[in-house]
Amino acid sequence: MKLTNYLTITTILVIILASIGHTVRDITVEFGLLMYIPLLPLGLWTILWDLSQMGRSLSHFSLTLVGLGILG
Image (cartoon, helix red, strand yellow):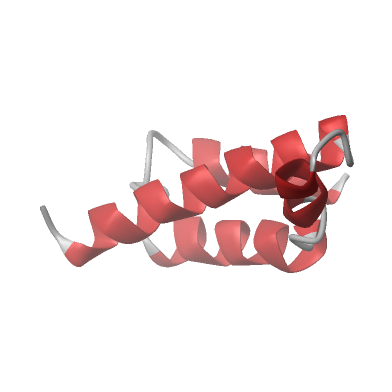
């Protein structure tokens, strides 16, 4: 796999972990630590990454829509 694929997969995994952390908050210590993943820089990174790939990270700018959803 190419490096761009690894970065896309890593970005998606961090988004999922951050979403879980912000949803369940501090039920356990591990979930509490996930809550400290900042969503604003993650959303901006997601948008910039997808735009730099010209919308080919997933399918036709869907990663950009995910990033905008995180920001909103």
